[in-house]
Image 1: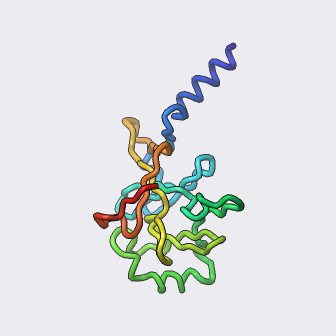
Image 2: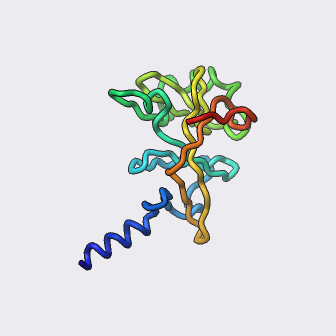
Length: 163
């Protein structure tokens, strides 16, 4: 009975009942960095201005796929095609994405996304966003229970769409 009680307390304390995932202190994430949570399949990004974003590692095409699914991953800084992609999408790397060299790609369909999770290579939905907050102890909390979906630039008034 003691083990079960301890497990239940840990399980409930983890945010499992609410869909909230509590991470490290906000100050432990450097501006311009990202962190992957493979257990819950999302990226946490801290932009250069200090803002936090979280988005799913599964894009719309793969979320709807019945068979094999490819997850979005950062393009390594030493990838031979990164410089060409940055040049190709330079006009779409503005606002909070300006100056970054962090791009994400899923390798089944070769879709490319910027550091904000916006789709760069054509038509289609952006990566699904998750709500991020900082709790009263200064830790990052990501709500994985609800996805927010959009098409086009996130700051566009008509970007929100049904998931």
